[in-house]
Amino acid sequence: MKRRVRRARTAQKTRPSRDDQNGEKLAYFYLIKHTDKGTRQNRREKEKGQNDVAKFVKGQGGACALYLTRGGPFDYVSVMTGLSPAAAIRVVAAIESRGTVKATLMIGAHLQGSVAI
Image (cartoon, rainbow, N blue to C red; front, side, top):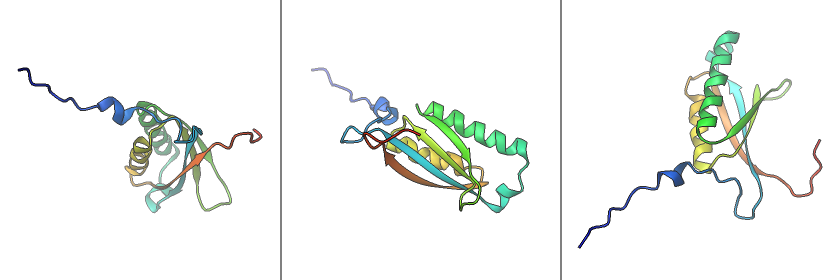
């Protein structure tokens, strides 16, 4: 009798969950604040960190947009889509890996019928 070998479903781990249980589109909002180390970076170092995170997000199957914010408690807001919940958490680790920023993750669902600005 042949023995069946159970293979890990690695595709499930990285497969993006584009909708929640109600079929709503999910977006991940990363509220990002510089640490003391981050405030001392030059422009080139900041751009390298941003590009590294963007490559990581793309590798996880997602897309991202980064916004510089002024006058609020956070220095940047990044909006990401196309990620699974597990990948969204891995992105937080990637963002914080250099020690230059701290990130707070918020998950949002697109409201049907809302007006696009």
